[in-house]
Length: 337
Image (cartoon, rainbow, N blue to C red; front, side):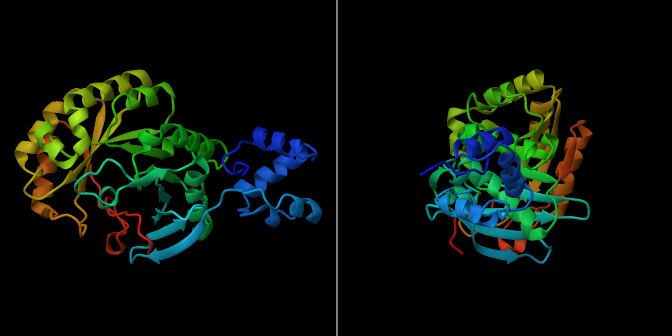
């Protein structure tokens, strides 16, 4: 089966049409129909002759099918997309007054098994191909009828365990869909050596590292993979990333009531990040059925923020959208509904 065309550059599509006996200008037409006009199959591309379209009926553009769609009260839309092999993934469109953000998945399921995350509870099936990542953004853009402005790789999966396809998708989304790399955030729980390798790609994306704990023992309880990647080693690699790229790192920290939301945790976290070119994103826990953690009180959240600010740590609180429809951070699962 030929590789899908979605994800290919203008030059690659031009080479492809020429290999099929078509003139080179057909490459630009194909490119525009895929990335700008939302073609889902070659049959949609009416500038091509009917006879040629029929001859190329076996060629897959690489678009996924919409399996289910649900709209939350805040306007967030969760999409379940059915892939060519029948697997289901989730992606989320998050609108606001001035932007449209897509929360993108990079794997079917997730092997990291973080204890507070619904995706990890469902196990891991496979990596997503480049076209399956790009398709998520096009799907949201077409459904909302407006251009996507920001992308966050915070959906299902660990992006750095699918680094080659994730980086290829970022380059395609920047080059072909027209989304600035600085408007793209890649979130990782940390995979040994992969942050250093990402720095070598010299992307302009924002790196967001999921810490979720202020010490190694606590992190090991929440994130099984932390046993192979101690907190201090992870932070050292993050410092190296800053040196190699000149870009600051965002640290994500899910606040779990009575576990990691105490003033002592804030002080410990601040000590780790002292002198670091970084920013802390605090995320109040979003409940899932599979775990018994609790969301902290507003008083606890404000106290944690104050403790960090007192120690000159840049911090914001991110209240997740789509909470009512299980479309918020940590709630995505490979459900068929």
